[in-house]
Picture 1 (spheres, rainbow, N blue to C red):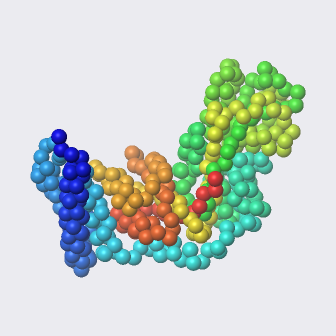
Picture 2 (picture 1 turned 180 degrees about the horizontal axis):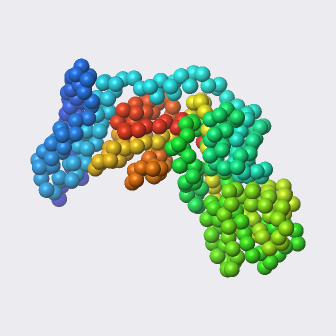
Picture 3 (picture 1 turned 180 degrees about the vertical axis):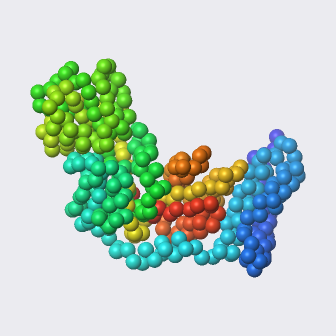
Amino acid sequence: MTDINESRKKIDEIDNKLVELFKQRMSVAADVAEYKKKNNRQPMDESRERALLTRVSELAGEELSGYVRSLYAMILEISRAYQQNIINPHCEQVDSVEKALAETQKQFPQLASVACQGVEGAYSQIAATRFFRVPDISFYKNFEDVFNAVENGECRYGVLPIENSTAGSVKLTYDLMIKHDFYIVRSLRLKVDHNLMAKPGCKLEDIKEIISHEQAISQCEGFLKTLPGVKVTAVKNTAMAAKAVAESDRNDIAALSSRSCAELYGLSMLAKCVQDKGNNYTRFICFAKNLEVYPGADRTSVMLIINHRPGALYRVMSKFNALGINLLKIESVPIPDRDFEFMFYFDVEASVYSSEFRTLLSELEHDTEEFKYLGTYSEII
């Protein structure tokens, strides 16, 4: 049996040779990039890459064919990125980020006009008071009205939920993110507790209907199953639900809403913290019409449309790996009016000051069918 230390020594020697060969390969790749730059050609040559992958697979033999293809797919991605920086050293999006860094005030504002969906007591309002010390809040009927208020200049910022730890992504927000132009300037994880509330004097056994937002209903599914025969109705906002119960003539209707709404609308608690999970968090985004990048920003959101061909998504994913960038979230969103086509949403962890961040933006801008940069920001926990 071979001694493991001897085997490791051999591996180290082989790795030394591989690194030297890799350096030589990248040097030649740079020569190729210079040629492509002079002749106005793009870094990617699909026919050349297919032929190379086929050749190295055959050289490796049947047992190692798949491993070699994976290895060379990564090498090709790294080579393309290297060539991209030579062919297109400047990126409009990187320039705009650097301009925003220079022009954005160094401290996140404490006073601001903010658009929220719903009415007084909404979770979005609670989130807004976490983002800003003294927010001047205007309430709007629906999510799209919040986006419109920011785009039209009625409010400087908008606050909306984007995902929940129990119920998942807020689909409507993602749909509207495709449609509207905006930039995320900060995000927040807010602990959410849903409570069943009704008019004073009502008892749980009297309730025939419960109203709330669809996300809250989803987050309290287990509790609602213990109330057979009770109708459950979705409304646009949990605070709206509490207000509707308070203004209703009925004594058999209740709302799932926040504790603050019970106090605000004079309702009594029938059951407290009825969400399925105790660690129930909703993530909110604060967004603006103009790009604002504050010091310390280390989270970036982008949306991409990727060419519809085999391996296209893998090539994008491999960029994060090649650059050592942590992928925090990926979401596929159907594109309205385009059958079986998707926009991919990514959250990545990368300092706005890092070279990897700039390289990633440059590559995504040049190598995807459509690229939408949504901002680089910090998240409050």
